[in-house]
Structures are given as C-alpha cells and as structure tokens.
Length: 154
Ligand code: RB5
Image 1 (cartoon, rainbow, N blue to C red):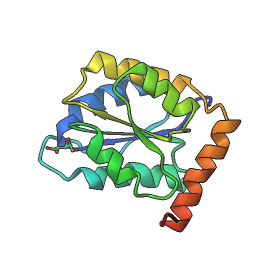
Image 2 (tube, rainbow, N blue to C red):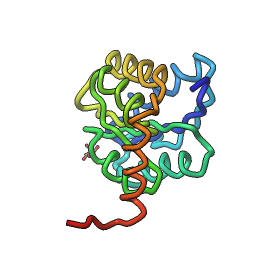
Image 3 (tube, rainbow, N blue to C red):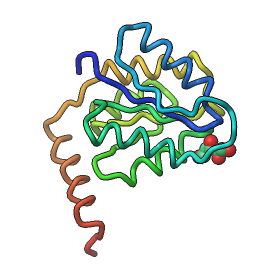
C-alpha cells in the first residue's frame, strides 16, 4: 500500500509512544490523524480504540494504530467493530505477517511492554508490508463471514 492515510489513538498509558509515532509518520510525509488522548489524564481505552476503528471502517483512514498499556485492551475493543482486523504486535515479524497473512488494518502495541525504538521499527515494518492475498484472502473472507453471523455452528 502506497502512502496510507493513518489514524492513531491511545489511552493515557501510551501518549508518549503515540506522540513519537505521529511525529515520525508525519515527518516521513504521511497523512496522520491523531485522535488522542492528548494528555495522561486517565481515560478508557475502548473509547480511543473505537475512534481509530471508526476512522478505518469509514474509509477516512486506510490503516489505524491503537495503543494502550499492553496493546491488548485496544485490540479487543477494536476487533468488536465490523471490518476491523486488529493485531497486537510486539516484534517486527508478527507485525509483517499480520499485514501479509491477516490483512490487519489496525496495529496495536503496548507502551508498557515495548520501548520506543522497537515500536518505531514495528510501525515501519507493518506499513511496508502488503497483504499477499491468495489463500490468505479465503481465510480473511471466512473471518468476514464470522462477523456477519456472530454465531458458530458446532
Ligand atoms: C490502563 O491502566 C491499562 O489497563 C490499559 O492501558 C491497557 O493496558 C489495557 O489493556
């Protein structure tokens, strides 16, 4: 994907990481919407995961980055929104594979788990990778079918 438009959001635990990422991406010439949080006052991560998810599913952004203390809360919340495939990635390999195999459209990271240099490398690797399609497309389509039914037949 060439020069994706991005939405980036976080809770209070990840403001510094979010600010670094937004600064770096804008510095690289990418269009980035910062949906907050903007200070370290305690907030609820589902609210910011929902803002990032809404930007992606509305088409206002091509990809999203959602951050919290662990990355887990924002990922669980974002994945409740139809059309979101959020992946918690704390290494470059899973970041790359989340794009190539799962067509992840929201990258989640935990600011209490990894440091800023690792996070910056993960963002770069994630944005450089493209969905490979093929057999992976069939599997992503099955995820979409699960979203449509909301139930699983046994
Ligand atoms: C906030 O204290 C913390 O629970 C949150 O950032 C995140 O780690 C939740 O998954």
